[in-house]
Amino acid sequence: MLIYGKRDVTVDHVQSQKMFNAMTKADKAVEFVSLPLADHYFTREADRIKLLSSMEAFLAKHNPAS
Image 1: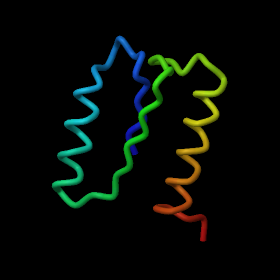
Image 2: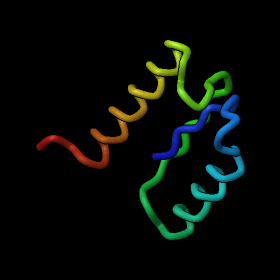
Image 3: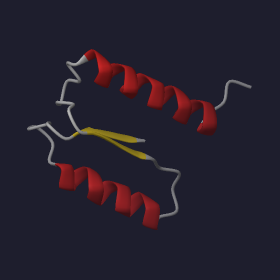
Image 4: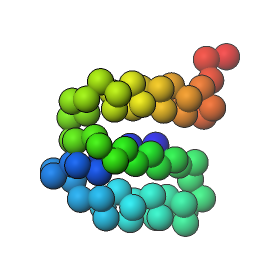
């Protein structure tokens, strides 16, 4: 899972997109969540909630707790 904040000045969006493309090409289970107002640290509460709920859904799908 790749989660990227569009206002991140530490990691360029292109890097995340390239990683997503490479993982897709390698037939890996990958999801890419892009948050338009999020920064590198997910300082906004709404972005943290989206981050955590996306992670929870991904893990439930790909690593279920039996």
